[in-house]
Image 1 (cartoon, rainbow, N blue to C red):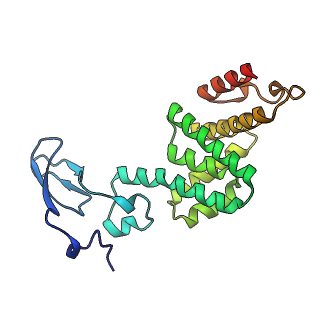
Image 2: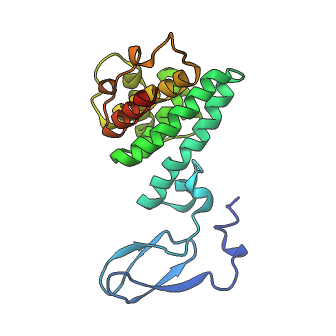
Image 3: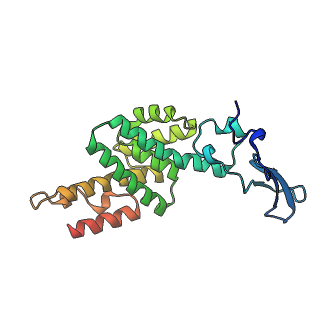
Length: 223
């Protein structure tokens, strides 16, 4: 059985149309399920601007359904994966609300740091959620979600290194490690009292990225 969105018997008028080539302006005919077409005038291949990839952004069978996916859709698949990872982590942790809360804070900081530092957000966001369950469980959950093998390896390696005692050796590991530490700092600030100064547990020099150091310094100065 075909996906209804890709089966021509369900198509309506307007399913075949022309789009201008972004390079030369020549008209290129598209079917609604064409992921891309090559311009017959200049040879430039471009993504179908009207195609609604919809479920292709998160479905693990998308490539078998509509063929080789454009790079833009592959990137969107991986960015949307983090939402499904977050759900699976919460299911795994069940009623351990402290760890769930920490994972959520870590992911929130990771997104801010990742955008500021220019890291691979797909890796950073997945790893920041999965840090709460460790590399082995991370692999199991990612396989369950149908993530690409290459992404699974990178995310699990990031989780393992971020939890390790060695100096992080990639931007993604640095961001995830910093996000985890900022989440801990935020939590400790909420529970701190005069007899437990934060300066004994945290210092700006413990962080690896510029934004994390600045945020830690700001929080510690206000403590």
